[in-house]
Image 1 (cartoon, helix red, strand yellow):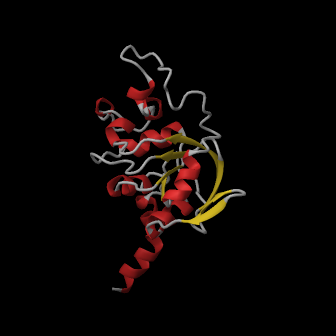
Image 2 (cartoon, one colour):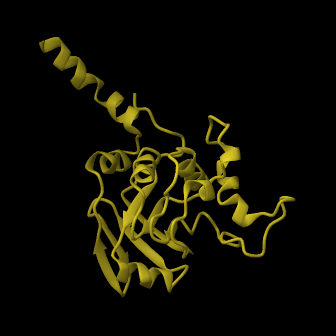
Length: 197
């Protein structure tokens, strides 16, 4: 039996529009403020994504809310500035992003620890060159095609770019499982190996 997170689905090809946050050094405390880290479940964290940018002290929406009016079903790709996900390690950050509806993050540089946490939680982190990134920043809402099997991002009619991804994380995304689910899917192979010892 495979271990699947309820939000996991097989990620092979994604066609979606972008939301652009053209700001460098977006850290994990901006993604999900520390006061929301007391929970051990990811349920509801998407509502608190970028909370301090989206809501004032009274909980009222700010006019500058970068996610306002965006349909999470059609805008599943976040284009962010350089060094996205820096700061403290917290699994709640990818939980909040996937809880909102994002399936992929594109930046010129994504912090290593965040990248690792993202891959374990059904969120694809993609690093692109500065020219391609600049095109995306200049065209918020653009429709992109991400092909995880080919490891390409396409801006239709403009360009196609290759990206690299850690092989194990890529396989988990393609299979729709987290690392524990991957191991559970190998139970028969493990049992055969142990029996042969």
